[in-house]
Amino acid sequence: MGQWKPALLSIAPFGKNYNRDIEVESRTGGGRYTVNLYSYTCTCPDFTERRAMRPIGDLGRSCKHLRDAVLSLDSDAFGDELTRVIFKSPHGPYERIWFAPVSGGDVMALGMRSDKPWLSLFYRGGSEKSYTRYGYHPEEKRWAYDSVPPEVEMILGLLKSVPDISLNE
Image 1 (tube, rainbow, N blue to C red):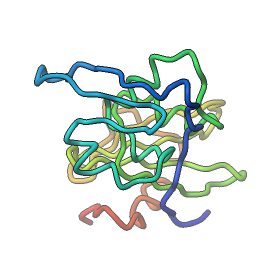
Image 2: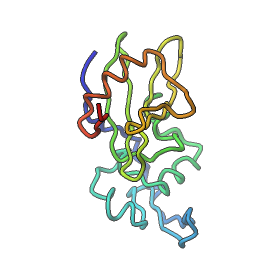
Image 3: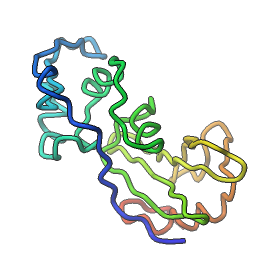
Image 4: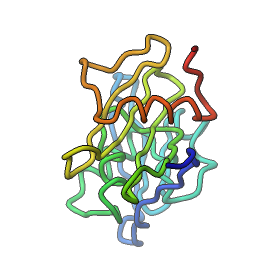
């Protein structure tokens, strides 16, 4: 078992045939934004104020409008199952993602957003064949919907070592 490391997850770059502006509706009804998948940009405040400095292809660069535009395509822009599961999570997009190795050579991931107190843990443990998302509220010390991951004590021990959170012992 190891310690958490910041993850740079990426999606495949979009070719020049995606170099066009796409108008998308604001989810909050506050207007419209322009998305370009080739330059991987959006005109929304979340992108321009927080995400634009991330490298193209970095999942942390994805605002919800870019995420929705990518998910609307038939293309599979993801190299592995964990990246695909994190990107498609309805609880994202995540600003920070951390990885920690677990037994058997596998990896778990932790997604965090600055606007939500919940952590999203992506784990494939026990008899699970694919990754499952578990929500955890560190201040309330509870799992969402009482859905507790296998090997929960090991996971809680690892969560204590995440640099960006406090589990308030």
